[in-house]
Amino acid sequence: MPRGDYDTSITVAVPPATLFSYLADVRNLPAYMPRLTSAKPHDGDKVTVTAHIEPPGEPEQDVTSEAWIRVLEEGKSLEWGAPGPHDYRGRLHVAADDYPRSRLSVELHTERVEGAQVDAGLTEALEGISPPSRRPKPGGNRRRATLSGGLSGVPTGGA
Image 1: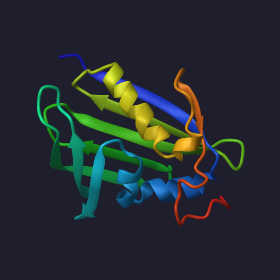
Image 2: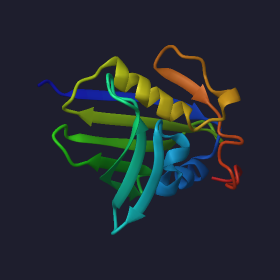
Image 3: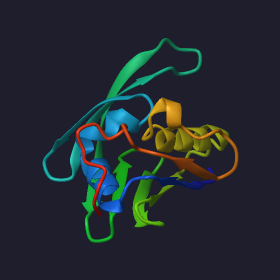
Image 4: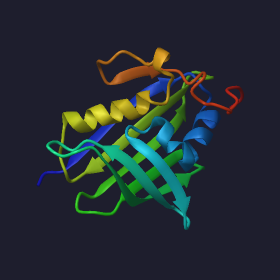
């Protein structure tokens, strides 16, 4: 089976340190990851995740599985993956843009090639970081979004 490598990025109107701090807290995953309803970190880099899915031809259901997430503070990156036959793994990176903005990039690898479905999921995840009223319009690989109001309880000033 051919493998799939996907990537996309957005510009976020929040300083890099603030954005990375928010994203590096695994407990925030359900706030911006499509269909994810729970993320519970435990035992180092392990995390138990629950997602609500709608498989074609099957009833909606909640599924729970184990994954791993590594927070790389120095490089302002997160790496993640999940055991299984599809070699699912990815990397999220926060970089400085024109201050106080950040560039948020995500890369995803899976042995299960799903093309448009994976691209849509990546876009949905990145756009999930911004409040619904400020989400960018679909189209193109370069998107703009803001986090003002999307980082509940996290200050948006400073680097």
